[in-house]
Image (cartoon, rainbow, N blue to C red):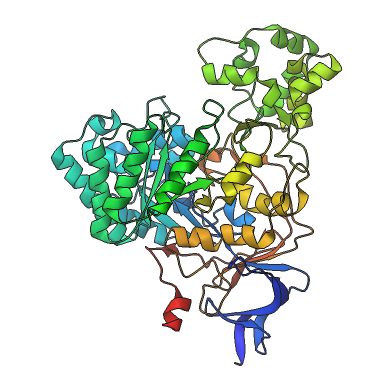
Length: 578
C-alpha cells in the first residue's frame, strides 16, 4: 500500500466490539477503514494519537434535527460531541409527508412536542417537498458535516391522510388506514430508516392539544406494521406512557410479530410512577426470551431541565411581577430584577393559578440544583436549593433569584425531571446494564430552550468511566460499544460503529484525561435569531467522517462529508468474510 487519505498513528484503539483496548494505527482511504495495526502506508493526512483513544464515531439514534437538517450544514450540538451519524424523525413528529395547507399544523406540533421555536421553523423551512421521498431529496441538496438518517413520523402521516380529523385524533377509516400503510411502505422503500410514533400525553402541540397519534387504534398501528413488512426493512420507534401496560406492551409485541422488524421504546424512571421502569424491564426481558427484537432506549443521566432567565422555564415565570417584564431583553430584565424593591416584591408574590407544571417546579426546591462548572448531573440531596436554604436559614426562592440574576442572567439551575427519584443514578445503571437496552434519548436538536441532553455521549465517558464519585463505574470498551456498534446495529447500519477493515471511516480521537463538558449556554443562531441551548466539550482531538476530519480540537474544519443514509446498510466485514 502506497499512500492513503488518513493515518491515525499509535492510538489506543477501542474498536466498538467491547474488547480490550490495544495500540494500533488506523488507515482510512476513500472513506473506508483499510487497515488496523502497524500501517506502513503514508497518509496524505496523519494524526499523532499516542496516548489518545481512537474510537468509532458515535451513532445517536434519537435526535430531532428534522428542520435543522434542511437549512444547516452542521448538525450541532451532536457533531461537537463526537456523533458521526444521527437518526431523526423520532417521537412521531416531523415535516413529511405534508400538504401546503398543513405546514402550520406540523410546525405547531414540532414546536409543542420538541420545544423548537416556531419562528425559526417558519423562516427556516423551505417546504420544497410534499411526499417523504421529496423530503429526502431536499435533504440531499445540502451538504452536511455528519451522516443523517430519517424515520417517517406517524403524526405527519396521519395529518397528511386525514387532515383536521387526524389532528383531532378521530378514528381512521379502513381506506385511510390503507393509505397510511402504503405511505409508510413507500417511505421506507425511498430510504426512511424506520417509522416512529408517540402515545404519551406529555407530547402536545404549541396550543396544548394532544399529539395526533396518541389514540391511534390498534388496527391502524398493525396496518402500518404490515407496511414495514411489505417494505422488508425499517425499524419502529415508540414513545408511550404505558398507562394501560398490559394492552400497550401486548401491542408492541404484536407490531414486532406482524412486521418482522425491530422496535425500541423510550424508558425512564418517572417520579409519578417510580417503579414502572422495573415492570417494563421485566416485560422486555420476557419478550427477548421469546425472540422478539424489542429494546428500550435509556439514558445514563437524569433527563434534566435547564432553568434560567434565557430559557423556556424557570421558577418565577408565573409571578405577576416577572410576567410584566418577561418580554423585555435579557439585559433589561436583569437590571430590573437587581433592584432590591423589585426583588422584595416578586419574592413576596403568590404564583398565578392555571400553570400546574410551572407551579409544581417553582416549589420543588429539593430537586433544584446549581449546575456548576463543570456541570454536575449527579448532585447529592444535600446540595439542593432546599437543603441549602434549610442549612442557612434563608428563603429558597431568594437563593434561586440570586443565582439566576448573577452572571448577567446567564446562569442555569438543574432540575432532574426523570431518572433521579432516589437522587442517584444507580437505577439508570441498572437500565444501562440490561442486555435489552440501548443508549438513546439525547434529543439532539430538540427542547432547545429547556433541555440539553445532547452531550450524553460525552458524559458517558467522563462521568461513568472516570469521574463518578457516588457509585460504580463503567469501563470504556462497554460505553464505546454501547454508543457505536450497538446503536448502529439497532437501526440496521451495519457498515459503521466498528474499527475494522471495510467499515466506514467514522472515528473519534479523544484525549480522555482532558475530556470534559462545559456548562450549557444559550445561543441565538437559529433562523429568525431564535435561541437554542448549546453545550461544548474539550478533549475531542479530532472527529472524522468518511475519512475527513470535520472537527479538530473542538473547531470545525469546514469539511462537509456527511451524507443522507437511505435505508439499511449491510456489513462490509461480514460480506467480505462470506
